[in-house]
Image 1 (tube, rainbow, N blue to C red):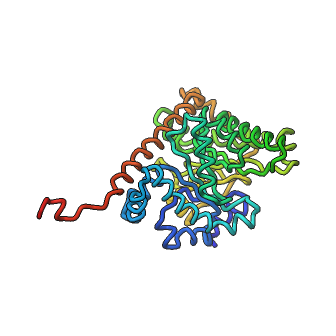
Image 2 (cartoon, rainbow, N blue to C red):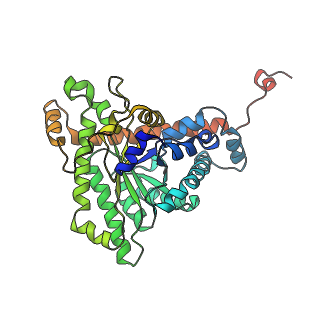
Image 3 (cartoon, rainbow, N blue to C red):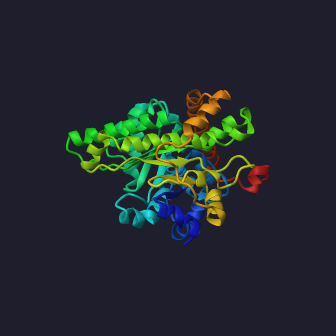
Length: 368
């Protein structure tokens, strides 16, 4: 067992892997990360699958087989993704059972083309959850204005939800309120209030957006400050009377998940965000490169303060530099939806390309 990753686990923070490929499932890499690096879950998104399916030929035979059944590219993708994610969910199932649902999760995202479609998101979430038939699979729903009512309804329907593309405390609180409403509605009609959810706060993208426009001493400080503010608001929420009533009825808190924790600035340490975001009761989903770097030389030092610490002072200083965090949060969420939509389009094109058997050399040259 790796000492560095174990320290985070012992602190009470759970490590998830922000990646999945069929290769890491087949060659035992994921199983090794579970056994040796304290990895207790994983996340996926359209960009991750675009890379996984687009590189190499590992998925080609399965794509061609599904194409012969007349499936559309989107249906082929979800078949492939569920093959991988249900296999991963089964690997994590012992952790899920041992923690009574507190760990051992994998995540599948609805089509990013539904980011502004409430009804379509609700229907897709229910369909994918049923198709997966695994209790430890989250459906990822973006925390867009149209996604918020879909989150509430999906929780009411008993679908575990990973709220994705959250960039600010305001966006987080909107998602958290949707989660609470969904649980309250379940209690009102006598349903089990225990429906798991996590809220994914994207961190490093803040600094990518702001670094060039601020003085050097404030670079790479915006993302962590936003996370600190959000963590303080999260702690306030779970201490509220409203949440305590739901907890007494058997509900579980919606946990904060730190996403986008790979360092983008080459001048910053490669474990910068992981070390800055250590906090009990949270999850850090790490790119594979970041996970291995932290296992090699990461350190666990000061944990996030429950009261937000220096967050507001840092944000005030950045505001004086011209950083409007509310406007930037909205922009980052729009750009996140757009980036995933572009990955989705690339993914569909790649599946379409691979859906037909490759031409023989003779056919390619037109030889008889």
